Amino acid sequence: LDSTYHITKGFSIFAQGDVSLTYGQFDNRRRDRHFRFDQIGVNRNIDSTTHYDEYALLTTVDLAVGLRYETMLYDDAYRFIIDLGWENHIWLDFNHFVRNSLSSSSLFTSDLHEGNLTMSGLVVRGRFEF
Image (cartoon, rainbow, N blue to C red; front, side, top):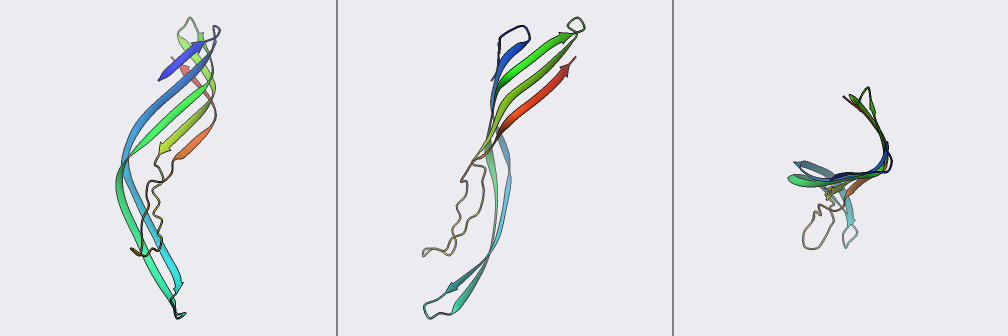
């Protein structure tokens, strides 16, 4: 999605949006040391190393909105464009952390795919087309 609403001859409001799928490997490694006291007060050390490889399809959403100025130069042979806008990038289910927890059913459990990564901010961008 790429749209532009022209306000005057040179100024316009633009909006952009896209969705993409990226396939890649997540390599998760974690090393833990747990200290526990049993019922008679003896310290038990539990060392664990977790290694989890996974190939996953990651969804990315990009959105942008802002103000654009463009002008043609040298008998419309070249075009100069400058944008001032706000961009937002979202990676869905990006966090692939292995979080270990002691439980009664099994010694370690892993919870994956919890949390999105979002980056957003003000962007100033210029280009020269010929």
